[in-house]
Every structure is written in structure tokens, then in C-alpha cells.
Length: 247
Image 1 (tube, rainbow, N blue to C red):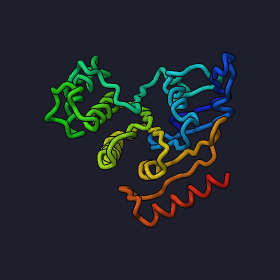
Image 2: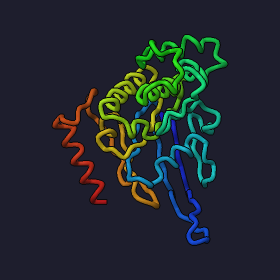
Image 3: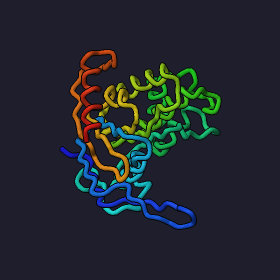
């Protein structure tokens, strides 16, 4: 069953050049159909519209010609979508557990849900710590717990592990897979790191430079956990790199 259908006929942005506004095309006739529970990576060069795509899916950006629908043709605004950004975007005046509770504050079980997630991300010792006193890696763990708190149908992740230590990033990727496996939300994970895309995803969409189009739509059939030193992993990476360069 298709959980998410994206049809972007046209998306542009205005660029100010020497005092004159020029319309630039980001997407034209972009069509994606993603199955319920799939983990999808959107891979492409910087500036190709990856973050813009997530903003359109989430409903943050409605200035486009087209449609984004989830389950039974409902608009995304009527559905449960979580978003994890490049930076944690936590509330510094709240504790770790208060941040996780925030999107579910009206749920009578919010305390239990939030505490269980805090435990799963390994921060039970810091449950009542203000987040601005936590390390960058810990803050991302809190942000991940918060993203999963509403039990979303769709989870959007915009390069959430960028600009952090490689060991911390590796541990966060493992944690993400563990949390995803429990309830299997549909995940759309934006990255410009092909190793990361292959390690995480069931399927990868390769986007071109602007105006952005789909260069390749490829299923990833490697058993988890995945290791980039594995021969099958390395072989697939070479295949995908070669395929996209030839297009």
C-alpha cells in the first residue's frame, strides 16, 4: 500500500540578482510514491532541493503547484508527521523529558511515553537536566526521542547527524534503526553521504542538480546491520556511484 504520494508539478524560488528578482526552478514534474513503513533516503548534492522537498511534505512550505498526500488521499496537515532538523531545535528552558513530552503534552500517558523514550536513547540519568547543559550528541538523542514521541506515521529527517563526531554519528544511526523497527513509521531521510544512505535505507532516491529530477530510484536489499567495509556494501556503492554519474 502506498502511504505517501508526492506530485510536484512545479516549485520555484525567487533569487535576487543585482536588484532584480529572477524565478529559479527547483522541481518540475517530480513524482514519488513511498510505501507504508519504508525507510527512504533522499540523496543528492548540496542545493538540489532536498530540504525543500521535506518542507513541502511536512506542510511548512505550501508555495508550490502539486500535491502531497498520505493514506486515503488525506492532506499532510491532517496526519501525524514528525520532523528532525539538521540542528536539534530543542527548547533550552525545558529539561530533556519536558522536550520529549512537548509534542504529546495533551496525551494522558505523556510522562510514561517520554520517559520510556529517554531510556531507549540512553539518557535516563539526564531526564531532568536542562538540554542546554547536554552535549551535542546528547541533544540529538533528545531530539530523536521527541520525534518518535507522537508515534508518527511519517518521520522526516534532514541530515540530522551532520557536523558531529563520526563515532557519535554511528551510534545515532544505530539508535535510529532500533527506534524505527518498533512501529515502522515511513521515514524520509535526507543526506549527501552515500555511505549513510546505503547503511540506513530500504530505498534511495538520487536527485540531480537544479532543476532537480530523479536520477535513480534504487532498492537496497542488504541485511541489517550494515557495514561499509562489507564487500556487498562496497560493491553496491560503486554500482550506484557509477549509475548516477552516467546519467
